[in-house]
Length: 505
Image (tube, rainbow, N blue to C red):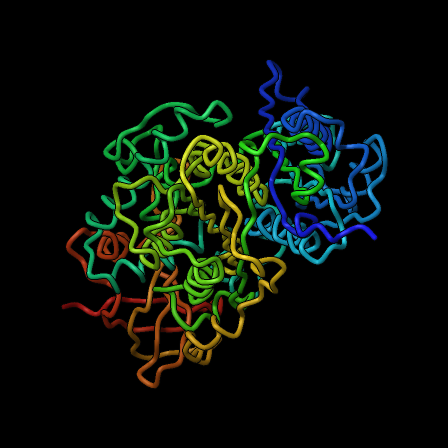
């Protein structure tokens, strides 16, 4: 009788592949599935063995650039052999790649599979050019842009007040948190600029980053014609760069399978336990805009489950669609502002292929740990600060029993969360600003402000400061202003929306 080999239950990352597609003519670029296949082939080459013909499991991050109902089936049909198990994430969400890696690791730890691949890609740059060609030819193009997809999914009350896309929504968190932390606008911008400058430095040294140029904090936060304000207080250089053609894949195996394939020990990165939690889908019903219980719970649980402290972390990736996300996460870790918080360059400079960004981070984290250090932490985020999934990767084996482990820590996140206030569709009277967002046009001129406010009784309502109220908009954006917590008046307009006026101080 053959003795049981515990190495069959230890999950390791054995191969990484990244692809940047920069054709001379954008319209002729790869589609998303072709990019995925190229990334898988690059990962196979990194392994040094023909693994794509022997996969037990294939996990695909959903994509929006070339939408189809079952991309995992299309991709599997182009592999040497169809894997027995095919899965796709529920949607194109930034936490998806880490969920896929965690799922593959848990299945290996349970002894159900021995070899898996996780992959994703977006080709929004090419998709945009093809959509333009469709329009020019009188054809209806598919809805493939971030704005189109987000607007289609927006709930009625959010639509009514122009809260349609991530650019509209994330400033609600930024402006509320800045007030909660006692920062002026300038202090908040300095923090954002410092983090982003560090991201650009990492991207400049990453051969797989989309923008490889160091940019100073001053350049990042200064609104200019080339770096316009897109939504106060975010400039163009502070937001995710989705106009990319990028694909990334990782190969996950049991330690026994890795050895069977001949993968050298110094190429192995061990997968630790992860943790996932979420907020409610309707961001208008959040208990608070100054914190994320899900990020707090998943970061702390991922560290605890692997017996790691923040001081043990050698390499870190904090999701960075907008500055508020790494700001929230770094406070959980008490991570120094000047210390690198990315291994691939973040979503602005490394590239922001919608849901697949953290697959690139996982690939770079693997490469970084092969070179130096003991532990890496990836903190992923999806939706409107809705979904959080954190995971630890390690250079050496983790304690026995770490994997498999249910990554659901929803109860811990829920225990941190207060009650959401009642949301009113109609209201007139006095109120107090809870937070706000100010989208801008393509010249950086404010279009209007959307105010989230509370009644004297604690109910929440939404109001608008029209673009014509220039003084009202300027009052919200002044560096020495403290609009959160200030009192104003709400009145109903003829179109049924609520108009906000700041009370004179």
